[in-house]
Image (tube, one colour):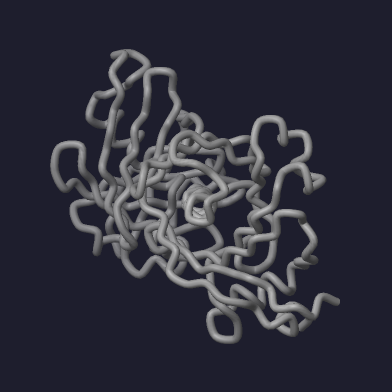
Length: 287
């Protein structure tokens, strides 16, 4: 067992927070139980997830991407389970690399289990991530909370979303439990549900119930889904007009700017904040 202190950092992207563990040569054993202990908010460091920073060439799941991307985001959920991708997480991952002097300002490729993601690091500023394309299945649902009901647009960002436009964000209710929706068979594996209000032209605010997590402070794919749904509602389809559509999306944890381009690619721009760094007692990993 490793008995040396292990370096870590803590960071967040619009208050979606992460434990960052630099391990360029992939020498650390990080079983699910250890990750869960690190992410525990009372007995550990605390975080929605863990960003294990590894060189692609040193990780068996990323070796094939090493030619495109030097660094691999080995992302884990707060319960220790492995996940393909996290939009807020990849910004914080890139922000760490920039802070550590491992990458230069400008364009960066990051390997993830969801493929190689393109990132742009502004000098001393926000970070932009290419989030892929949205699919818009025709089948939608009706979402109901406390006697009110709204039609919700079906948007898939690699994960499923139902976007409902409401008059007041308080109408979303407590959002700890899944808001009822029908027909249920539109989302057989569950869904992330966004409630959205207008703040001005090209400017919306949202709350979200994330599948399996309840209400969260920020959801990057959810903000992308909301921007696409708002654009279609407003009669904007970049694929038809040839003009990008940009929306500012306010979340409880901060603000993201989402742009959809004529080729369908969606970019998300927002902050990445490193708040602390230190060392982990190895006994925490051992249990």
